[in-house]
Image 1 (cartoon, helix red, strand yellow):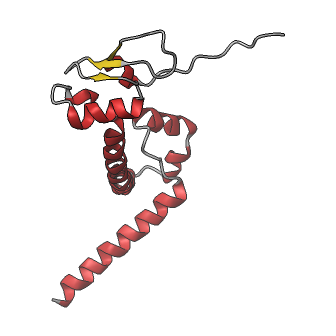
Image 2 (spheres, helix red, strand yellow):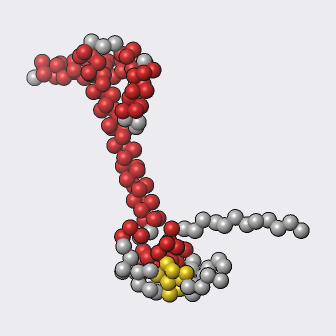
Image 3 (tube, one colour):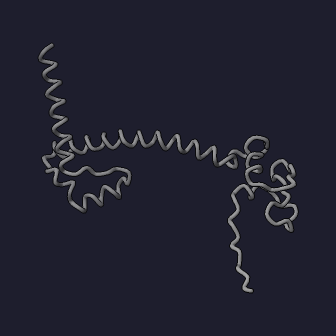
Length: 154
C-alpha cells in the first residue's frame, strides 16, 4: 500500500505568540501565552486569539485580532472608495480645464503613451477618454452660463 504524504497546513499567525508545551500532541498541543504565561491545555487558534484580544493585558496592540483589523480595513476601504470617486471626478475636471486652457485637443488622452504615463503616475486614476472630457467641458460651460445668468438676474 502506497502511503500519501500529508501536506502540513500553514499555522495561523497567532501561534507565534504562544509556546508549545508538548510537541508530541499533534493537532491541538498544550500552549502557554508568551506575554502573560497563561496555559491552555489545548491550543485552539480561535481561543488563543480571543485570549490575546480580550484577556491578555500584556499583549501588544499589533498582535490584537486580525478580524478587528479587517473590519476596520473594510470600513476604511468603503470610505476610500467614496473618496476615490470624488477624487476621480475632481481630477477629471482639473485635467479638462488644463487641456482646454492650454488649447490642447482632448484626443491627447487617447494617446497610448499618455495612458501609460497616467497609469504609472497614479494607478487609481482612470484617465477619461476624449468623449468623456468633451462631456465634462460641456457641463462646465453650462454651469458657467447658469452662473452668469443668475448674476445678471440679480
